[in-house]
Amino acid sequence: MDPLRLAHLIAICLWGGLVLAEAVIELASRSDDEIRSAARLHYFTDLIIEIPLLVAIVTTGAVLTLRVWPPTPLHIIKIAAAFAAIAANAVCVLFVVKRHQAAQANDVARVRVLHRRVRWTGVGVPFALAAAAIGLARFSG
Image (cartoon, rainbow, N blue to C red):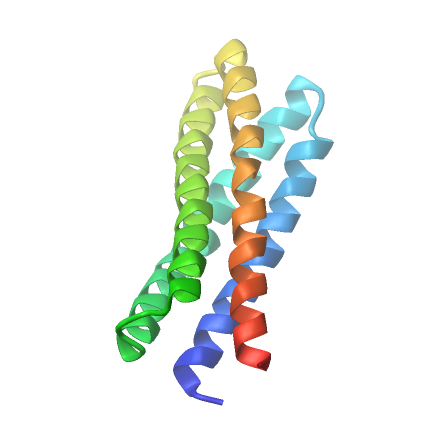
């Protein structure tokens, strides 16, 4: 397998696993103390792991796209779905940072509002799954 494709696939798999772990953390957080703990943990995983993974995914994906230029219509759909997922994740990172700041300031009401917003960014998951399905179908076919 092409090393760049392999790097792209590994980064996507790591990102998917991280998003699943973060979803468990977010969905399991109910009390103010749990939400505050989730805010801290999610903040550090985003900074240390998730942002670098997103950069790796976008970089390798862009190079792979340039290799097959012009892209097919299915490839364009895959890129659009991936872009929607990454955009939702970027918005999530923004909310996570703001929530961490609110938790540091002990603004419980703001933390709760941002906690709900973080959860809503899960709307990007179906787009990520669609992009992955198209990519894996193309890879295996």
